[in-house]
Amino acid sequence: MSNTEVAPQEILCETDDSCVGVEILAPRQVPLGGPRAMDVRRTLPQRQRSLIGAWCFLDHYGPDRVGESGGMHVPRHPHTGLQTVSWLFTGEIEHRDSAGFHAAVRPGEVNLMTAGRGISHSEFSTPGTDVLHGAQLWVALPDGARQMEPTFEHYRPDPLSGPGWIMRVFLGSFAGATSPVTTHTPLLGAEILLEAGATLSLDTDPSFEHGLLVDTGSLLVDGHPVAKDHLAYLPTGHTSLALAAGAEPLRVLLIGGEPLGEKIVMWWNFVGRSHEEIVGYRAQWQAEIGAEDAPAAAGTDAAGPRFGTFPAGEPAPLPAPALPNARLRPRA
Image (cartoon, rainbow, N blue to C red):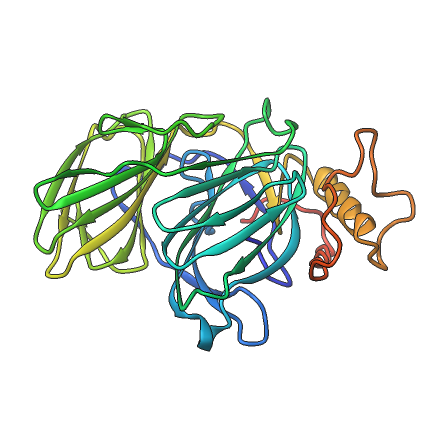
C-alpha cells in the first residue's frame, strides 16, 4: 500500500522505552486515494511513537463496501528499505510488483513483500470483492538488510485454538507456532479472536515491545481498556499479556519485536537513513517514471533501475509528492 498523503511529514524513528505502562494510540483518518477515496485508519507512525520493534507503519481499513467506497485502487508506486505485510479479514486484493511476483491477497493468508534496495508494486481490490476489510503494515529493514534484492513470500498459517479463542501466527514464533516467512529482526505478528466475555493469558518475550490493534469489539489488556480502532502499546519488560473481551466478540492484531536500535528517516514510501538518501530515492523514482520534475541525471544506477520495470498496459504510476522546503529532520 502506498502512503498517498500529498504532503507526508518526514519521520525520524528511534527506540523510546520511556512509557512503562500501556500507551493508547488513537487512529487518524487518511484518504487512500481515488475519486471516492477509501479511508484508512492510521495508528503508526505517530508523533509520540514511531516504532514498535521494527514495525513502522499500520493502516487499518474497512469493512468498506467497495461499490460505495471505490475499494482499493493503488497504482504502481515505489518502496525502499522496508517490508510490506498484508493481512485481510474480508475481500481480495491483487498484488503485482516489479520483481515479477503476481499474487492474490486473501483472508487468513499473509503476503510479505521485501523492498530491499527498491521495488515498485500495485494493489487493486478484485472485481468480485464486495466488502474490503484488513490491515497493511510495514517493517523497517535493519541496515544490514536494507540493500538486499527485493522478494516476495506468501504463507497461510494453521489456526491455534482453545476455550473461547482462535489465533493465527503469521510472522515470527509465538504460542508454540512458527511462521516460515523471512524477517530480518526478531518480530511477531498474529491475529487473535476471542468470544464475547472470553479471556486469554499469553506468555511474551520480555525483550519485545508489543502492540495490540482492536479491529472489532473492545479489549482489556492487563486491565487497561482499549477501544475499537485504537492501538495499545506495551514497552519491553512484559513477560505476559492478559487479554479480555467485552460484551461482543473481539478481534485484535498483535504485533511485536525487539527494539530496532537504529534511527530511520521515513518519508512517503521510502525508508532511509538520511535526508540525502530520501532525496535520491525520490529523484530516481521520478526519473524512472519520466516525471517532469526529475533531474536529468537521475534514474538508473549501476545495478539497473532501482524500482524495476512493470508490464505494459498497467495504470499510470503514482508520482512522488513534492519534498518539503526544509531539510528532512526529526519531528519535535
